[in-house]
Length: 324
Image (cartoon, rainbow, N blue to C red; front, side, top):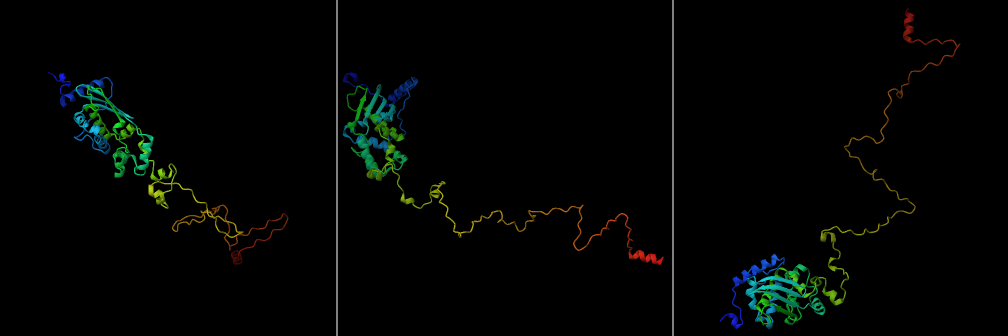
């Protein structure tokens, strides 16, 4: 009697499922369907906080604890050839005896639940990088994983559907997809907040004082920076408003004389400079007499009709005339 006589399909080895999965993936890609398969790089299904917390949360519930291990082999051998995560919904393709279609619906976090969690964890998340890497205080990580008040879904918030003929609520194909979600959160942890329908950045913009005191959005002065040089602290130039000029003290009635800065400059001691007001050069055509030495006297003009005055002779001429 064949396996079909008992209502079971024949066993398909992992190698055969992998071969079928590759064949189906190539056929879908040829039809223009873009797939996002789950590929594990090691023996562990998940390695980061978000991936492991997702798997641990499902295994903690008795509804899933006995059924989930059946999906580990499927996800490890690459049977999940496509996995898409959107807001409140997961769709997948799993290769078993045939190719099966998976759909999982997860309820979004209610506004009241999200607000309570933000209040409880306010001030503990400083940036998105630490949040995505799970580098948070242990109390905050425990609050995220807490059943009921945390962020991970409970079985009552999950609806599943598989196209396989297995009548179980959670078949091995669905179990493989649940583990595949944990593996996907290892590389894309932001998809967890997309799945739960909340904005992760809201955990950063809220501080404990804002939530308790109701002063969110109001700027507060940081006392720790009082009196600090902000330009030196942050390494940037910060323009500040110049203080008003202080009036100078001067005697009443005396004018405020502003001295030119040019007159206060001193020439170098060893500089050979000429005076700014150079003297005019003398004209060679105009010879001026030196002081103390009178020039030659000019003879007075002779009037017409007047007798000519004898010309004075020099002493040398008179002596020669006497000798002659």
